[in-house]
Figure 1: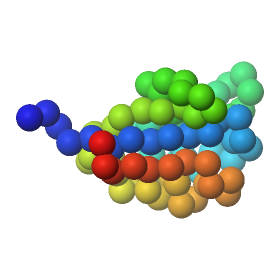
Figure 2: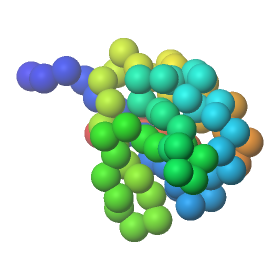
Figure 3: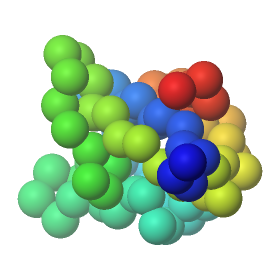
Length: 80
């Protein structure tokens, strides 16, 4: 059995580039130098969302990132 993971979904098109996600969870988030929006590191495009599976030890940081997002466009799914 592998490392337990959870899923992050990010609706990048609605991002305003505040940077709070990159502050709370810098292992998963970085600010894009070209357009100023947040990039979910290692994420794959699925419809309107960017999705990534992340090790469970990063869950709390990403919960804080989701809570701090003023646009509420970061979703956490622990049931994968």
